[in-house]
Picture 1 (cartoon, rainbow, N blue to C red):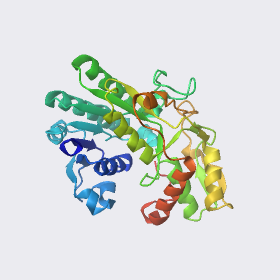
Picture 2 (spheres, rainbow, N blue to C red):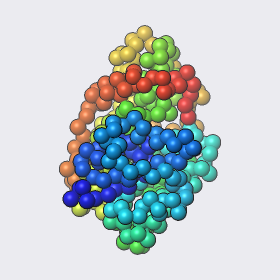
Picture 3 (cartoon, rainbow, N blue to C red):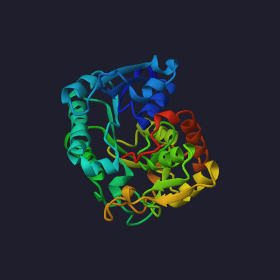
Picture 4 (tube, one colour):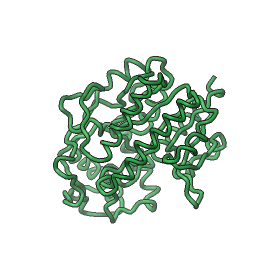
Length: 329
């Protein structure tokens, strides 16, 4: 059955998308990978996947902001996992228009094409940032939304568009909401690779933003398998579902653990350039995973310790791809 099912993954060239593509191929699905067109013909992290994986991937270069290309990519697929987005919060302070065009309009393009083509399943990727600072914990799917950055505001908008297409047109949509994903292939704009690459490059002062916020960290393979479990369940259409470990750690505690593992002589410094505006900082994220565990067979498989070990190993062997000496926004 899986061999007869074709899934389009938008954003397949990115961090989570490349892992998801890999896991779907291993499970026997046929994959069409929507990657961001560029004149270098580079396919992002897909270029690093083994040949035995990539021989089963049909690559479709395009731009999620282009409705014609999106519709063309979605022809003859059974499902779409929509991950293509702009995700860096600091950059959204500088370029909110681009986030609206990519995250909201891009999602609308996917929804419109799915409605026209009668796509059987549509998974739209959300983010725990839509909740803002926790008003109660653990944060379940009924928690209020709060746009504390232009990025989170555009993701709220995209989510609600997805909901509207389910309610208005019976489109079989599911909103998938991962909490903070980390692991191999993540860009240096995220906190864990920021810490690790500074440490691996020999820096004695590790520059970070706010140290007191807490996060609920998912290892990327758990996130990818969360998407697949949600897709394979017949109970998830019309739902929005967290992927969370239901455990939290502060940024300071996280940094101290990585310092201990890599370079105990390093010091952690709060760099004002990296601080979010006061009312924009999300101070606490701790997700509830009751719903995903009730509706699917998903369970988190990787501890934070295991995940960090795998991430450190990857970054050690790919340090040349990271610019540890600058603030990556």
